[in-house]
Length: 600
Image (cartoon, rainbow, N blue to C red; front, side):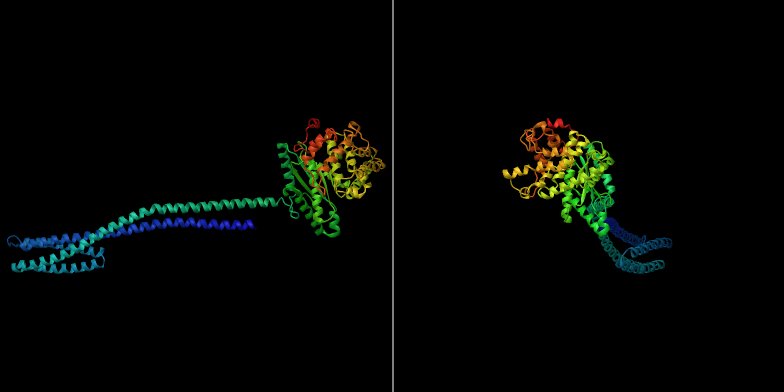
């Protein structure tokens, strides 16, 4: 829901930015319209003033013509006023008078209230002047020269007054037109001066809003992609445990195998099965079963470096894909899951694990089959964890038959758990040593039958500790010489217990698993090749687990330090080829380097 809310807010912000772009465009359009209206208004005022001034000038010129014509008529030519001449002058006078009337009408049309008032006054005076002029004409026709002369003087005075008034108004309008011209030029200059900043500001605003819109659209696209990715991830998630589901498991396994093949890095697959889930569902209900499933998912997330490595592939089946991890790393991870599950549930480990390491060129289906096979064997033998080895496929064991083999393996597992329970300082020690023995034996090329027998012997190598007093087993400090002599008897006791089951060969390996290459071991002081190879393998596996395994009184040392310590004592305490084989199976690379090359 949160991404959708953010997306809605982003869309709202994008709309606001779009509105801002529209506002910038409206602002530009408004500025352009204002500029045009302002310029047109100033130009119209100037044109009107020019037209009004022209009307005044033309009216004044017409009146000048009228006065000159009148003067010509009044003065005459030596007083010779013939009818023909008077009639011709009279017609010219009427034409000029009509022109004056038209100019006064223009003044009234183009001018303001004051101009219209003046035009009315001038028109009235012009009409009175026309009446007087007509009277002069009439007097002249009647030969009354004295009247003509008197009227001529009156006309001169009237004309002078009118002309002065018009000159004053014309000058005022010329000055106004000049001011309007200057105003127009100032307006146009202001508009030109403001245009560039306004356009620049508009372009900046346009760019800002465009960037905002682009940014929000990119953010919206990113949110959309993130939401699609989230939905895609959600399709890869198991709803109950929130681990990745079977579809994600198949895709990730194929991808990790391909990358590992290119980089020549190892990869290990761990299958886990939640024990007794059906019984829990039947007896306590599916809700209780769901609680157990969630508890295992929590333990898996706690045990791995990244939660993306953990999967629920079926009802009670889970998986871990561990890139750049060897089989021993898978074993340790499975044990961490078991320990975490004990903390979560407050009870014993209730999950079984099968581990398989990818070989070069292996396909996903084959790796899954091997991990599943190891899981089946672990559940059948009541083991917590088993690492796949080839003998699991061909049914080779100790030769006692399948039923007998299963029964024997189950008893061995029970004995190993009893020993680990008695020696509380070494939880899972026997199981880990057994798996290291099988890995080293496989690396050394032992037969499938011997690998199976050695795995069983490794599981039982400390069974003799059942006869060691708890005070010695639980002692966290160094043992006294007397206590150490008692402790050394566990290999003899273990030999007796295992030999009594009919496993004489395995009992012999257990008897000598503390012998040293240089002859300084116990119980018989055997040296070199006198020591069975399986016993030498067991000693290296036992020492490595003792150094790297956590104890209540100390933390286990890192893998590299343990290998270095084994290498320092190779050829004296430990068999060099066994140490080299252990180094090979723990190296951070794909398997395949010959042990002889490592042993030097």
